[in-house]
Length: 55
Image 1 (cartoon, helix red, strand yellow):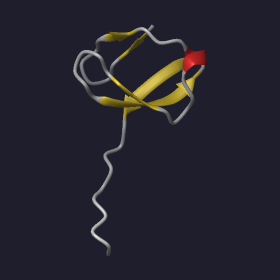
Image 2 (cartoon, rainbow, N blue to C red):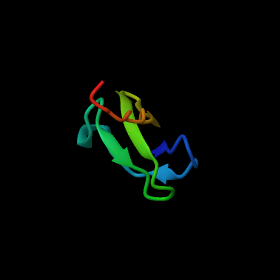
Image 3 (cartoon, one colour):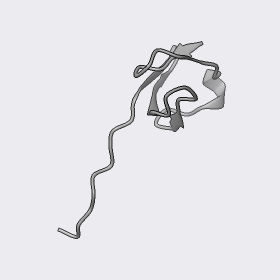
Image 4 (tube, helix red, strand yellow):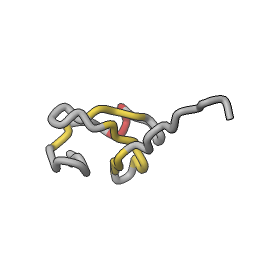
């Protein structure tokens, strides 16, 4: 069991079901979370994508 770093909700996900770098959504608060480690399973807030204005 892992917790959302934004709202601390329990997220029922198994390490073998995700890959490092994968983005998942918290079912409670909707935050985008990135899998940063799979043993032990760790989540962090996903980095926000910056707008590409063609510069």
